[in-house]
Length: 166
Image 1 (tube, rainbow, N blue to C red):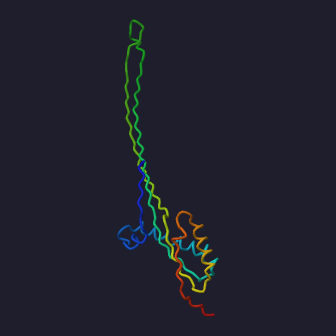
Image 2 (cartoon, rainbow, N blue to C red):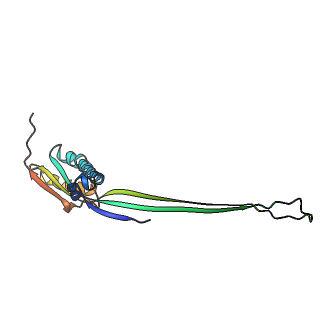
Image 3 (tube, one colour):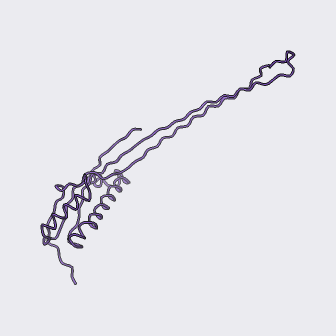
C-alpha cells in the first residue's frame, strides 16, 4: 500500500479551468460551495439575520490516494496408485496419473478521497451589525470547523447593504 497526498489550492485549480483537471476542479468547487452554504445556513443567517452577511471561502483540499495490490497463485498436483491384477506376485504395480495445474490472479485497487484542509473566510456583512455579534459569529465559525478554520483566518468586511423594497 502506497499512500500519496497532494495539496491542491482550490483557487489555482478553479482558475485552470476544465481542461486541466475537469472532474477534480469541479469536485473542489462543489466542496467549497457546499461549505459556504453550510456556513450561511448554520451560522450567518441564524445569528445575523437572513441576507445580512455572505460567506466567501478559500479552502485547501487534500487528495489522498491509497493503492493496494494483491496477487494469488497456486499449484496443484494429483497422483494415483492403482493395483495391477496381472501382477503375479500379488503386489502393486505403480501406474501413475499426473495432473498439474497452475493458476495466478492479481488485483489492483486505488481509492481516492478528497478532504477539506485549511480554510480562510471573508464575511461580507452589513455595516450596521454590532461588533458583539461579529465576535460571536467568529467563535461559532471556529467551533464549526475545528482545526480547519482558525479565528484569525476569519475576516469581516463591512459594507452598506441596500434594504429590500417592501
